[in-house]
Image (cartoon, rainbow, N blue to C red; front, side):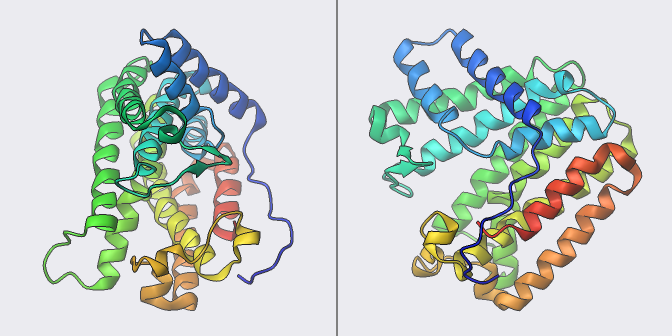
Length: 295
């Protein structure tokens, strides 16, 4: 990946599904019995843009497993609420201390630190409530949601506060960070979509393998972008991880080693879809995009 300034490809996300997700997220928060100022902060956190990768993975996984978008929408709302909660808290002064996200003031800048903390808390609490509205396997979906959330938080701790098992080599440390901090919710998204569709064991296993490999690959690609692209091309500050002394795949394995691992994980994710046929075509297209993106 070079520092080219050519236009990046557009993620192959179904426009109809994206529109349904946006509407469902807004309606859930508008209907929630919470104070108006808390609702405003939650809406700011959830509807301030973003790729909606996690809810789309939920919906596409459900469709690939033979279900419907309606079956999976409660799980899609739930996973996006958890993702939004994590961003609100990550942006706080005690962690990343970011003042802008997606071109808008972060929640604590717009509403104050106290409200941002409470909005994040509220979104986390609403997530299993949303998941409870699924049509199939409610308890299993909630378990995946909250287990993925705990793994994500553990990954953030490893990334920012350390605490690795004694004697763990750097290669395993960076894998532990990435599999949890970023990969956990992507893997959970695929599993939740499969469960929402009442998938058979083979489909659940295949989508689990797809989600796990894609989740790790996604963060390695992010590491490469941070290491090789200009801030102008990437659309965000680059080189921050190296400056902060954080573990990254290029830092541990080198640029070419990281590219080889992306290729390996891409093939592994693809193999997970082998038994799902044409229904998984959009998941294959999304995998191709995520493996080759440069921003």
